[in-house]
Length: 339
Image (cartoon, rainbow, N blue to C red):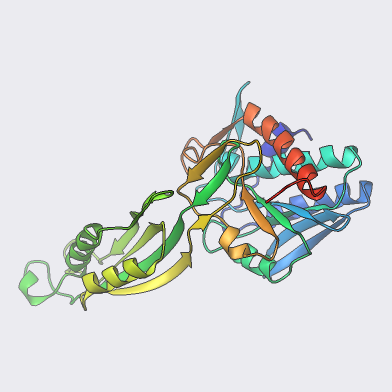
């Protein structure tokens, strides 16, 4: 398959987080065939039942190309025109997987070795695949992590701090609200106060942000709600401690907060001769730690298209990414990079 065909084939396999098995099997088969042709090895790296990372390598890996297999919901299939490919995961990150595999084929055809590809599960939720991979390193000294950066090297990424907020109330007939206590009204008041928290700023990464992602609660329009909950996420530019402290003060016994996920902001390094950017999203890089080597973050596609109803990727960016990945691997594997 060429990079466009492979992108569409991957998009057309539904792999919303926790349902990555089918796309993992597709990639394992594809990479196993590539490994047989070029004296490499492909493996599954178990994460949990019916979920696994896929790794393939040729020689002793010095450089690893990596991104994630899972996507956000909802799934929708691929389509294309002369310039663009659409579909869930087009830029986040099925197109990136295709570009990495195409780069591998280019390198293998040129007789290169000592590199790996690693595709992980769970990036969109909790980094489960990267956390398992961090415990199973293969000696790689450099990690090229793929996320949509419009083929620019990212110098920094924001972190993430996610909470579930729960408010409790007392049931009553809605005609007599004084006999009950509305958990929904309490939650709304708490969320309004959370929105008023002054968030930290950073010279490189900009300001922290807050998203109220989900709200659920109540039983019926004629019943005072006894339960309500929300999920919120802060994008971090520094330590999570000030936000945790401010949130605790806002809640002050009115509601409960359960921390669901935390990953720190990252400062990354440039790559010689390549344009740079700074991004506000979070990646698997903190979950990998240093186990897979010094990280670089770059990939085709725009993050502004990711997670949308019109997710897409430009074909020219895909083609350019193939060359970029091949060039970076060649430079890093040959020892030509100076930190």
